[in-house]
Amino acid sequence: MVSTFKAVNAQGYQQIMGRFSSRLATSFLSYIGQESGQTILDLGCGTGSMAFALAQRGDHKSIVGIDLSEVYVEFARSRTDDARIRFEVADGSALPFEDNTFDRAVSQLVLQFMPDPFPAVQEMCRVVEPGGLIAACVWDSYGGMSHLRMLYDTASALGFDRDRTLLRPMTTGGELESMWERAGLEQIEEDSISMRFEYENFDDYWSSFLSGDGSPGSMVMGLTPEHRATLQEQVRHVFLSGKPDGFRSFLASAWICKGIVPETT
Image (spheres, rainbow, N blue to C red):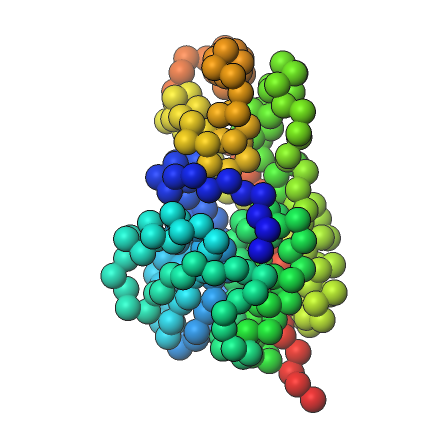
């Protein structure tokens, strides 16, 4: 599986996204519903936010999280002693599981980092039994992430960001639904959910990019020290917006989609 996501430091990921993705997981799971006694695949588990939310939400038989990053998988393992949860390093586009292994498969904040996510969707369909649920969630990074637009638009105005990585695959309306249709899933539903990214102050916001994890961290840490300092000062100006430094809350939205694996005939 090819991924454009830069995984550097698990604690850094927790700072930039993990502390928020756990909240997103709760809303995502409310959307797709739950059934007890199931075996569930978490494709692209990262540091474990979705797997832990699943464990807290339902009486599941087992939860298997897979991710390409050994650093993130080891961190996720260190965070739990729940016997139902297992984390493995594996390729989401070539899953090491037999057909019909799971009752459902979920994927949160992963598909947008795959240049071609379709093989991973096909693999989820393969390893989930007929009648099982396939669901995914991705940020609306271009139109629904105001705290990142603040960073990237400021960098662009300064001439520091020429890659413009906000408009990713699967992050606009209808893309997930179209891929679910292409995969042959049934009873497909696409929607959006919203939450807030909250920061105690500007340092809490800015420091989240300094581990180099993810696209914004990679962009910030890829700058020269001089350019990074200039960007920091300009983003701080926008963050403060004429008010004293302190708590800020930014609205964020994500696309979600679910569908059912067809029954065999």
